Length: 473
Ligand SMILES: Cc1cc2nc3c(=O)[nH]c(=O)nc-3n(C[C@H](O)[C@H](O)[C@H](O)COP(=O)(O)OP(=O)(O)OC[C@H]3O[C@@H](n4cnc5c(N)ncnc54)[C@H](O)[C@@H]3O)c2cc1C
Ligand SMILES: NC(=O)c1ccc[n+]([C@@H]2O[C@H](COP(=O)([O-])OP(=O)(O)OC[C@H]3O[C@@H](n4cnc5c(N)ncnc54)[C@H](O)[C@@H]3O)[C@@H](O)[C@H]2O)c1
Image 1 (cartoon, protein in one colour):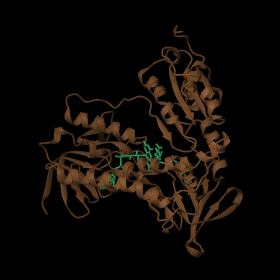
Image 2 (tube, protein in one colour):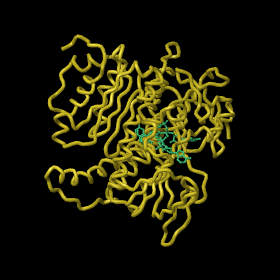
Image 3 (cartoon, helix red, strand yellow):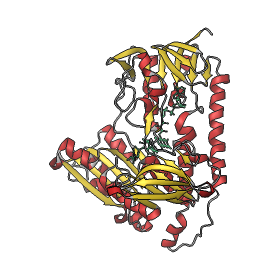
Image 4 (cartoon, protein in one colour):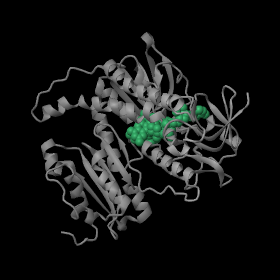
């Protein structure tokens, strides 16, 4: 089999797929992906999880309504119907994208084989095809990390890649982990009717978040499902009737056994660099396995950019987030097309949201990080409860909060952390202020805030900061 030569090879069809701009119309492009076309977000990440999270959250509405004097009743959730509706849409988008790229575009070929570097500008596929290009973009993403314990290969043990397609709603689900994925799936499955036990190593869930959020969320999670902290899994064994038993180790030799129909492992994600033989291309790796890139997204070898090699998304980013992968992609697309005008990847604070009950959104520094970076005396912190603004009264909200951290000297917003109704939407103007350098007092007083919308929680949090007066009324 001869070597196949392309102008551009894109390894990974997630955010990498969007690199095929009209600029490449007269050039030969290969997209290499051994998985489902469209990558993680579309097929097994952001999109299907949120399509499950929304109906799961609706299941909490009757209880919420009853608290406010409205009787809605709750007749249960139809797992099969919800699952099939979601994947009918998602699978069709994936299949359509594959067909368009592979068949619809004459200059683009999709190669559905596992591939590895066999030279700086050469990949070899599992089927023995040798692919070469002057320009290769590595957009190969990440995959779930699995603990090295006996029993993780049992069919009842899932990761986020498989749990959304199970044939029946598990009666009892054990979720191992306390980060984004564990929290979202615990909320989804408990909302839809499973009996969920979440097991975490440390006392707090969402430990990467600001401590106020993490503490309050941990308490609220424990009111919604069975939360066990201070345990790690030691093995998973077959039980009777198709169950498994999850064996856990705790402090001072304590042990615990949990029976379950299904287990979800959600203990972080590892970059797919090992699948690429990045070493064959001499590429630099970080300690956590990510590829090293410079500010222009060029891959590095020996600390220097390798001509023609680029990376984007989870394989190289410290943020495993789709909007980050998409922005990386825009930077790479521009830089490929304008080698004389390279743009650096310098976008402002990275926001993220956790689509649990309640929802969480954050951007910028946590209070702890701000103290380390600026010193306690230099920062101002305000926690505004939803329950203290008019719309919060309408909702009788007792748990939502907006926590802001600002620089006392400049009034610049350093961090924003919200938990409660519509938090991922409420945070956006705060992200905007941080990204464009609008000081907090100007932001509060330089525009109208609709009364009595929930956005008043943000306005009041801004006004509660001890920062310089902008002179606006
Ligand atoms: C359950 C879950 C929920 C999530 N929810 C959100 C969310 O709500 N919001 C958000 O911003 N982010 C979310 N994320 C993260 C988001 O999905 C990722 O950050 C994003 O999809 C990464 O995109 P990517 O293009 O870097 O990689 P991917 O989309 O993972 O694409 C990489 C592709 O490369 C292929 N590949 C890898 N190695 C090889 C090889 N050697 N040969 C051939 N092909 C290869 C893989 O098959 C894969 O299709 C979620 C992730 C998960 C798992
Ligand atoms: N809404 C969103 O934006 C969203 C949703 C899901 C996933 N994601 C992205 O995917 C990434 C991966 O999600 P995740 O939840 O798998 O990772 P995470 O980093 O958020 O959480 C990992 C969890 O696993 C635990 N853990 C790690 N190693 C362990 C071990 N050896 N033993 C016991 N516990 C261990 C950690 O303490 C933590 O609780 C997230 O960081 C996020 O960037 C985003």
